[in-house]
Image (cartoon, rainbow, N blue to C red):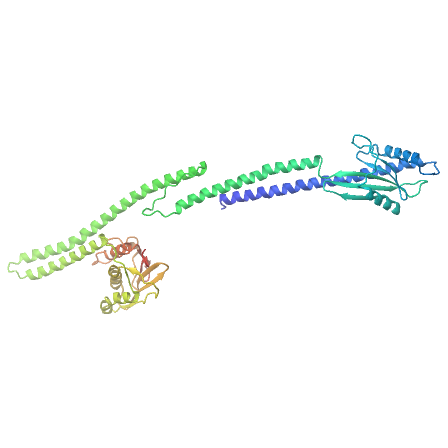
Length: 484
């Protein structure tokens, strides 16, 4: 599924592309309009030249020729005036190769008076186009492009008694002015105000929304010391996002309330299970001591007193161990951190249980640990107590001929202590509550060993977990390599 941000970005790209395409089409339309206007101007000049040729032909009909004097030039100017009177914006005249201009007229000139002077700026162009028409015997045109207009000069041969005579016309096609140009400017301005304005507005909306969403994400991802509740998000000022923020804050408050209720219920349930287990563990030794005392009192000669006292002391020792373990689990002690050489620590811990493992025909091995510097820091006495409990559990659950390995490794800034065995594994019904007090799979067990391991790991700001429960058990204690 595409995000809203990507969809808005795609819409923005479409607007920009649409604006560029529309601008290109408007420009091409204007250019085609300018080309059409240029073609019409060329046709106008050519038609005016043909009209001039017709009028001249009518003028010289029946005339055998004569000297070119001022009266003749005036008559020829009148011919040009008459021929071009219907061609708006067209000027022209009659040209002779040897004499130059014989006549000139611009009947549609919009100045204050009639224009009678030959345009000096275009004189060379007029001379060239007439020379080309005289040389080829066919109409000829020259087009000169300027910044805002195109000059069109057309010449056509004139038949008659005068030799080397051609007619010429000249007009200008304005390419950067006029209605089409104004429409282009208006269209581009409207395009800039609508499409590109919409694109700019959408870009701002996309930027503002992205920034506000990033603020919400940052507030949700920020660590909050001492709490796992959802943070209270600040309002963004955007009504749509603020409704989402209010919903998240409300959900966070309800979740916090429910979490506290669930935690309280879980603590009560754990306390109930612990109390039931503790009552069971205490009542069994008391019952045994009561039975031994009653048997000893039943015999008047006191022959059973010594055996009864010995049994009672054993049960007292059992209660003492139980209460010690319970205090170890419930009274958290701050670890006394020290740099520890892992190979020496693992060897010393394993050697403590070597005789018991050998007596049960179990191979107990210790790893060398990672050779990294600096050395890890933890409380060696507490951590050895945790490993002792894991190793004793492994020995008690591993059959003869099995193997137990104790090792340590480093993963980033974490220290991992592992104890694995080849025993039958952990029953399914115990896995969920394995680290709770008084949960055990042995009839003679108190169920406090793994609970103590968990509390020691927590004291070191770590945790313990069961990695493998089938085909043998594998436990792992994870703590910081060097707590800050």
